[in-house]
Length: 66
Image (cartoon, helix red, strand yellow):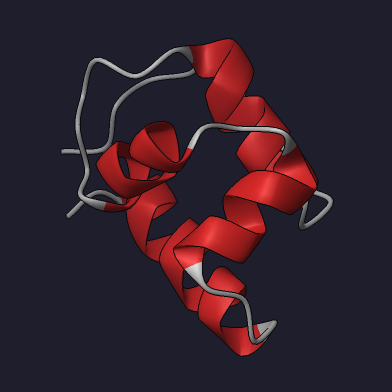
C-alpha cells in the first residue's frame, strides 16, 4: 500500500468515518475512495487532493522515494 493510501485510510478511521461517510462528506465517489485506499496507482491527482484536503494536506509533485 502506498503512503497516501495509508494516510487517508488511517485518518478516515481516526475520524470515525466509514468509506461511505468519507465519500459523501468529501464529494468523492465511493468507488474512488475504495480504490485510493487500496493503493491504485492510476487515480486522478485532483481527486487525491480533495481527499487529502479533508485532513488539511495536499500532494505536490516531487521525486519518488526509493
